[in-house]
Length: 192
Image 1 (cartoon, one colour):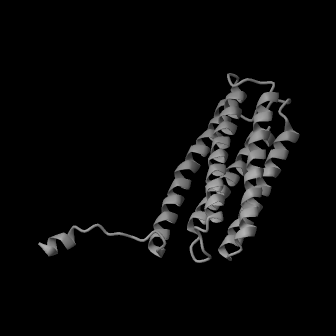
Image 2: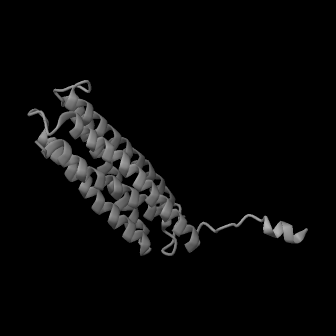
Image 3: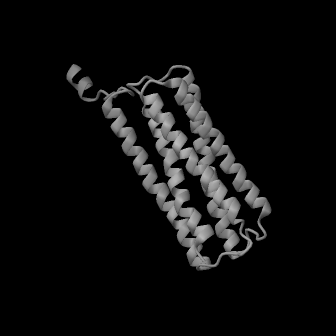
């Protein structure tokens, strides 16, 4: 009976073990691949539906500003991750807070753009524009929520310089969202 119990025992992997981190990392990369395909479909639909048409009244300066804010947030996210990995939790939390603020600034900028848009979601370009920026903004909001969780957990001492996988995973997600915008920005604002 003992041999049968052993054969059917559930294999438990410690959440801090290198094996668990490899599994988590693989899962995150698979998520990026599937989510990247979703974003690629949105970009392809933009060109399929509208060609290279872009309205002249698109707010170029505001689009560039929100892009700069999001790219700056990638730098603060990187600095947060590096600081936490090296045991400098106070600096890491400061950089996380700055990343959160920049992320909120990005979303506020996109919402401002929506309110100033002189085209509607029912128009050809408007459908693509509001769909792409809306889907991306929802990912940014999700990233902000993840960053808040990491900020709180870091303050409570949940990480050590030897265990930072949750921080790394959230920062990788944040960079993924930033990379998507690097493709969306020219697709929406520059191609004509």
